Image (cartoon, rainbow, N blue to C red; front, side, top):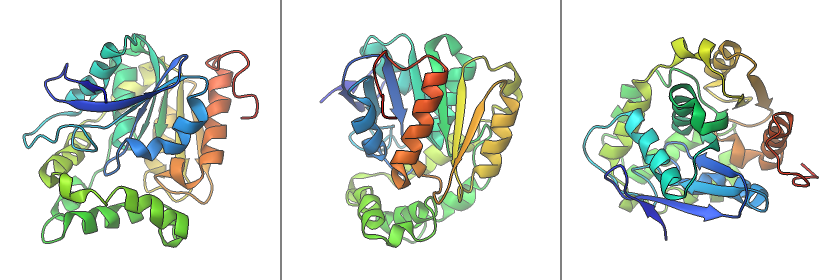
Length: 268
């Protein structure tokens, strides 16, 4: 069970497969299992590294304040421990913020970035989100948040309900202060003024019902050469709502940028 401690915390991650490095960074309030479908699809051809962000899964859950830069350093610490000097970074929501930060501040470390359900300036209602933790059981509130991150009705299907319950069944192991500080870290970091100088190939993916759709559209429009895909009948967490559609969009982008190993993903 691998951990990185390069940034002063224990950051847990899983490694699947061999090949070009593909680093998967989950959203708040999920964990590395948000990428379950993509691990299955891409690990036969890539070295897939799925990380538990600080605050989630088997990683440390610090009480103190931290920044999005600290969270990016957690991710890069994992890469360093795995001998990865350059990777494809894919992130959802706060994970997309981390991927974008790496792409703008350290482009030499990114072959490409895939930004899912995110935007360059993050959520604007952070304190209202944080206030929602008051007076509610943590698992109950996390489920409320996640229901808003998927398309209407998805959480009420047998599959959708099962998937979302995965992320609240261990709510008793989480720390609401740390989770709140993840929201704050993302909300306080605006990268909009850097987008025009972005040189890393970029794909922005939003669900049709994603509350971040406007932000994703704006972000894609400001990055030179960026591609933007909207996946119908999905929300913020489109990678688990329509994994086949999501994976097809991701594979097409990787192919166009010569980032698919020869002979791989023939049926994508």
